[in-house]
Image (cartoon, rainbow, N blue to C red):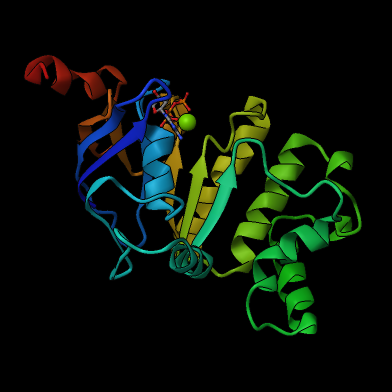
Length: 239
Ligand SMILES: Nc1ncnc2c1ncn2[C@@H]1O[C@H](COP(=O)(O)OP(=O)(O)OP(=O)(O)O)[C@@H](O)[C@H]1O
Ligand SMILES: [Mg+2]
C-alpha cells in the first residue's frame, strides 16, 4: 500500500483523519505484526488490508489487483478468494454447528456439498477438532472457538490470514497455542499472516513489526530485542 490516508466523517460535521501516508508492502510468506496503542488506527488499517474498506486516498494493491476504487461487490469477491479472517471474538454463527461454521467460506463458491464437507473436515482435523463437528460454539472453550475460526479461515484456501487481536479474548496458555498455530501455518503452508496486537510478547511470534502511532508508521522492521526500540524512531523524528 502506498500513502494510504483514511478519514471518517464526524457526527458533528467535517472529518477526522485516522491514517496518514501509510506505506508498506507485505511479501508472500511473511508473518507481520501490526502494533500500536488503542486508537492508533490498527483496525482501520486492517480493514483496508482486508478489503473490508477502501482508503480515502492513496493506492492499495492486493495480489496485483488495484482495490482502491473497487465496488463493494468486487471487494467481496477479492476477500473471498484471497483472505481468511480471524477476529478477537471469533465471530462464529451461534446457531450453526462447528462443521457448518467451517464450511461457510465455501458456500459462496461453486463447490459441491460433498467437497465442502470433505474440505471442512480436513481443516477441522488440522486444528485438532475432528471430534467436535456437531458441537455448537457455546459448547466450546475460547481456545476451541478460535481454532474453529481458524479452520473456517483456512477452508477457503486463503493466501493471506488477517487476524485482529486473535488472542485478545483468551488466557495466555490458549493464546500461545493459537500463536504457535499461526506460526506453523506460516512456516509449513507458506500462508502469509498479518496479525494485529498491542502486546509486544504476542508480536514476537512474527518476523516483522509495523508499529503505528497516531495513524503514522514509526517503526517497520524485524522484531527488536526490547519494546522500547519500537518507539525510538518517534523520539528522533518528532512528528
Ligand atoms: N467507522 C468509523 N467511523 C468513525 N471513526 C472511526 C471508525 N472506525 C474507527 N474510527 C476512529 O479511528 C480511530 C482509530 O480506530 P481503530 O479502531 O483503527 O484503532 P485501533 O488501533 O484498532 O484501536 P484498538 O486497539 O482500541 O482496537 C479512532 O479514533 C476511532 O474512533
Ligand atoms: Mg482495533
